[in-house]
Image 1: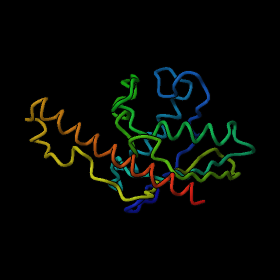
Image 2: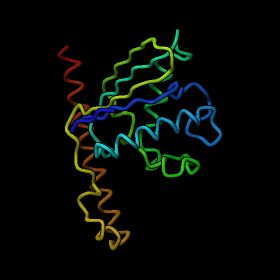
Image 3: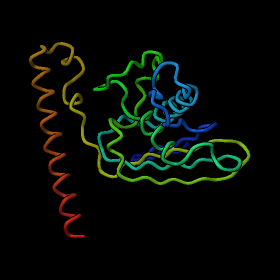
Image 4: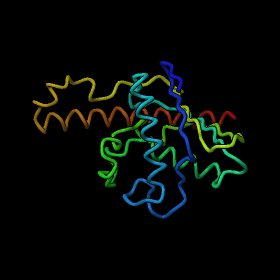
Length: 190
């Protein structure tokens, strides 16, 4: 495991969770449950060590898969599985993840749509394992909840909280519109 102020990296034994079924790999009883738990435990440990907090910034996901011969799944299935598992699984999701216990709260980024760059590689040692690295591509923004002290958040009325959430969503919408405009200009210029 390595850490830096702008990134987090960790190693996991075994194959990565694979996104290749109609059932969510985060659902109770998923055939990927053991792999999902191993990934969440490694991510939680690394985040605790380095002080990583769930980010709102654009990120890069680097994945190196190791194992004898050709891996049992392809790059897109591994990248999809890992990106789903490491995003926020609670806020705004319609999925029961209670079976994950405290691991349900492990998230390195809010949404896998924040992944703007991917690197993938395979190596051939004897035992299956993989390394995940997430790093910021843009500076993280302050989370809306951080602007309200924890004690004040407990005492605010539902109306005050609603206004704060609407303001945060409006700010995020403005960011997305600005980001979308930049992307359009880059495409038009290229």
